[in-house]
Every structure is written in C-alpha cells, then in structure tokens.
Amino acid sequence: MKKVISLLLTALMAFSVATVGAVSASAVEEDPEIAITAGSHIFFDNTNTQWTDVYFYAWNYGYFGDSVPMEQIGNTNVYEIVVPQDVPDGAEYFLFKSAPDWSGQQTANQTVETGKNTYTPVIDETGAMTVTKSITIDSPTTEVAITPYSKSFTGSIDVTVYAFNTGDATATYQIGDAAPVAFTSPTTITLTSTATVTVTAGAATTSCTFTKIEDAVITVDAGGYTGDIYVYTYGGDRVAPGFEQMTYDAVNLEYNYTINGSAHVIFTTTNDWSTAVKFLIYDEDDVLLEDQEPLVTAGEEVTYHLALPTSEE
Figure (cartoon, rainbow, N blue to C red):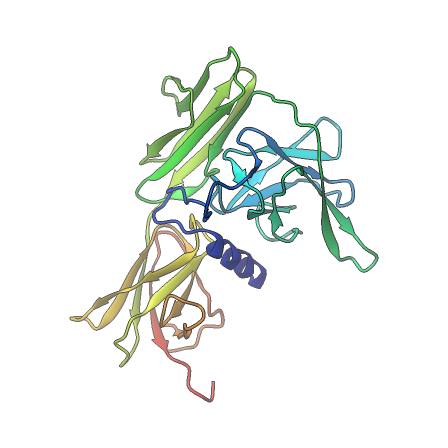
C-alpha cells in the first residue's frame, strides 16, 4: 500500500480536484508546447514485459486516478489508448500497470515528451525496470472516449464524452436506454443515479458504467484535543486524494466527516505533509488499530478514538 500512497501523493502535487468529477487545470505558466494532442494515442510496447493485460493509470488531463484498459493493436505486442485532452511537454501524469488494482506490476510515473509517444519497458539482469521512449506513426482514426472511467460516486458526478476525427460520421452519447444524443465537441453530462454511458462515432464505440453508492460517515473522539483535525483520503472510490478539515461538534465534543464513497483515511493536525502530525487511531474500545490507514467502506458509519503520539511512541 505504500506504493499506492507514494503514487497518489505524487499525483496530488501535480493537480487538485475541488469537487467530484471536476476537471483540474494543469499548472502551466504560459502557453506550453503541446506534446500529445487530443485524439492522438499513447502506445505501450509489451514485448519485454509480456503482461496479459495493460492498463493506463492517469491522474490528470481528463483522468482522475483511473485505470483504463489499453487496446491491443491486432496480434502485435503494442497497446494503445486515445488521449482525451492536449498534454503539454514535460507533464508527468500517468504510468502503466498489469492489473486494474495494485496487485500486479507497474512502471514508474511517466512524462510526455514532444516527438515521443511510445513507451517500452526494459528489464535488466537484476529485474529492474526502466522505460524508453520512441515515436510511432499515429495516423488519424475515428476515436471516442469517456472520462472519468467507470467510477462509483455519491451525490452526482460530471462525465465528459469525446469523439475525434469523425469525418462524415455522427458522434452520439447514450445514457442507459435513452435516445442517443448527437454532439460535436467534448460534452459534459451530470449523472445523479447509476447509469451506463455509451459513446459512438462510426465504428468506434466505448461504454463506462457509473455506480451511485452511499456516503461513509466518520465520527472521531479526540479526547482533550480540540484543535483542527484533517482527514487525508486516498484509494477506494475517491475521485482524487486530498486533505479535508473535519467538522467539530462542540456540543457532543466530537469531529465528523462524510466520505463520498469509500477511502483509506489518515488523520492529521494540518493539511500539509511538511508540518502534519499523524494521530494514532484506536477503535471504540480504545484498542490501537493494526492498520493505521484503515479503509472506510461506502455506506459504513465508524467511530474512532484519536490521540497524538507521545515521545515514547
């Protein structure tokens, strides 16, 4: 799980998401050179890894911690994914992995580079993996995409549909069994209930299912501590990791927080890792939890007792 935290902390520094489904803007000073244009592809050469499946894990430029299955090109070792938004040169926002979760193998975080669109892992005699970059001729083809990719959500979620190089074909999106709706540019729709979204343009089609789930509610008793408490959430059904301040109930002398789905939680004194002190987490019987970054499941109501570590701990 430390691997996941490291990756998500890296992603957090690269972007912030204000609300579920909100698209975050890249932090760029002036008009950057675009290395990968919307509608083009990123390729993965599976020759040396020979993974059964290849997933594109990204946390920006349309994606929100999504594991998207890449499509194998014919019977070759090369896999591809369409890029839904322009990506500036030097942006680090994705990696490749062999499973939809973190049970398999993965590369290090990857950056885009002008004139390079193909990533080939190379494994040395010690088993260490590096990734080389090269160029593959990318002829324009009709492509469709949906972001984010098949997520659970609470309340509502904004979903964006895309179609590229459609030519004479009409691009449409369809929510469940409703009538298809034509669109000509990236279009954002808001879902408030479980639904499957399908996008079609000519022979190109893709579908994602978005599942509405219940909130998880956390109540915290921090003993004599009455300062700020922040909860850092990651993993689970979270659209993006991050800090949020818990609400203090001065009547019941407790802190409360609602998670939009499920997530691992860490409780801290500040919302900055350079100054934050992590609270120790105990259950309602004051037994120290073995897992100090517990997973709180959607629909669950949990109560924790918190304490700041002493000098002996």
